[in-house]
Image 1 (cartoon, rainbow, N blue to C red):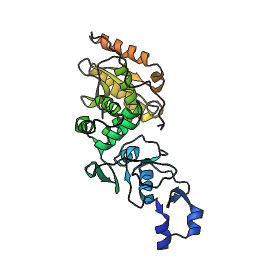
Image 2: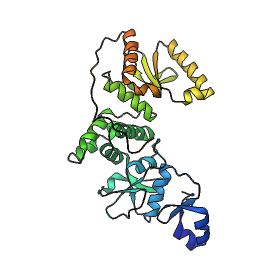
Image 3: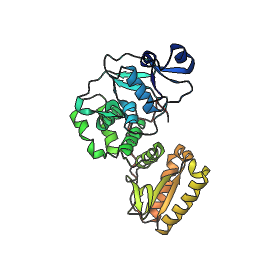
Length: 296
């Protein structure tokens, strides 16, 4: 929090003059500034909103997720704040809900909703597939199993958009290590394949997702897998090892996600070659996919 400056406190203590504040700092939220040119992380932005509230706010939603350690949240995402009476400001979304004290924690010095409540909020408020992707990321960051948070849906059975949350809890998997891994898993499930396991141990290696009984894996390769020489070299050695262990790996890149049927066809071919005789049972998860309001 060192980069965040509470203007009134800095001026009162003599640490900054008003002239220095105007000349060298940029406003984040009311009474909170950073050195000009600073790029804040989502967690720092959450802290800034909390400071702006007079250290009285409760952070929720994506702000809570960021404080709890979740990755992939855009730096410019608005701060999510609980409270009917919180002062509104540009870049702050106020959620007029009451949350019991037992669903709150202190994290990084800021009060926020706990993992279970944050999943509850993200799963209901966001559209599919963003809600599932965000919940995957939070479970991955915290190590909390989905079984450990499922009870909150039963406690709030009449809550708005609870069916969205039910679907997220049914499909969530903390084994996803990136948003794109979540997207690939969604493609496989919607395409009618058996639900894949994630982060499968194969000797001294791991496979992103797949079916251990058939020794077929699916891996998402981001740009760094091709542009980083060390990463690329490591991938070659790893794939050779998996081949020696009789695994078949279907590799997926960003362009493939624009043609989900091609991914399904490649995976089915790999499974068939390994003896799988099952049939596809395509499903529609959630409403038609809409562009998320908050990008990656």
